[in-house]
Length: 631
Image 1 (spheres, one colour):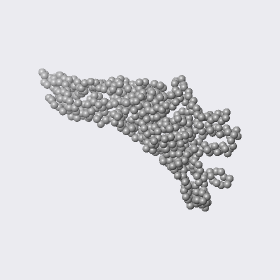
Image 2 (cartoon, helix red, strand yellow):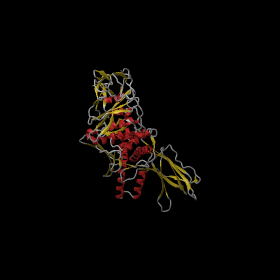
Image 3 (cartoon, helix red, strand yellow):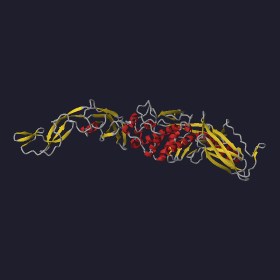
Image 4 (cartoon, one colour):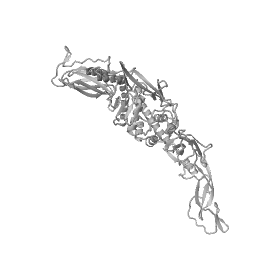
């Protein structure tokens, strides 16, 4: 029998645990693990109380392990071989060991479809048949991507071969607890004659905890294959305890816990495997704690813990989706995978399981900002996915390898840390595409605009914007970056606290005189409360510089010394020139600065053209000025 224990906590959370029981006369046996575990408890008790004999006990265990079901549509007839005797169905002895072949296929059934049991450990064994020797000869191999396996045995006589499959991959292990070995399922024996072959084609139905353990193992095996495909190295060993009362990863025990209810939720299993990878690659420092996928964890836990927890949960969700998308063709017809939606479940107040899901492409309900795990995995997904005609802000698409290795190599423990590494090593923010995506999820300043009126060379503009960021911890330090048409940097201002900035005349002329027809402006924001985060980038604002605009300089002249004066225009243009003397009474007076002297005039040499006014085209100041009128 199976019971469900439901506990409603004071904070309205509901805890649910399965309890399995077995009744024999007036005795009851209980286990939180599985119904099979209850049976084993009863068998042990019956043996200790002499209710059953040792032989009966062994038979019960064998019966319990032989759970695989033969595929009725596959022929398992013994093939003819040179030593086969059709009269007595037995083989004669061979004088030397002869190569004999065992092959077959394993699959699992989810209640609707068959799926190949991929990359799973297979043990092949047969008894020695020596007098007084009860030992078995065995060898091991793994199924391939199609669930097929094969092995060669060298035998001198007919043997009774059994095939056992275990819930293990080359880097994965699913077991009940730390004291047990992996789950297994064993076939009935078949006779293999020297030089002959025999085939085993079996599947695991979706009817017991043992078979569900293999489904969990399949998700973990595919996660490990993904790691190896991305890195070119062997995936770390991953151990899973199943079934448990919670879905979680324990770094202390280095073990993944999966509930029986979650055995067919690949997103949950791979999310927890993602935590294992974070621990292995040192890419998180999550403090743990309560979290909901679409809430601001900074508000809930403070900035330091909230940032680390949001990143610690956001990336594993993103990882779980990438794995099943990468192997989408292989994993056809498995429920709730190879899409852009994270699938999970919860329990209502009555303890009933209710499914829920969250779309990474269009997370319609989430708190924005760097403290929300939904915002984090949505940004990561937009970095990764193909351009979308429905998303004008998403104009980048990075490969599986880039997105996985960028995270691993960054060693980041917050989203901000990852973003800085990504911008510096993979894709610059200068082209505005990173800022376009960040702006959709509350991770950038907003509403950047410039003062009204026609832009003029003589009047520096004023820029305005909104701080942006999560409401619990909005950005508080800013600078403006200006780019030319090729998205090369022209000027970056100093950091400031205000969300308004009027450029100096010198800055404005530096921007204006750059060789470009359009200028692109972006706000770069930071949050300086400890731990400091940023940079975060806004959507770029394009401003057009009027071409061929004419400006007439009107200079005023200021005496510098006996030889020179300075000419200055209100636009900021200035230069130094020698006095232009005109005879006046007994001396000479400069026509421009009105300096007068009765002594001899000694000209130090031409320093610049003697100009009253000059009308110029707006061209880069490094080029020669076109003088239109001069004296």
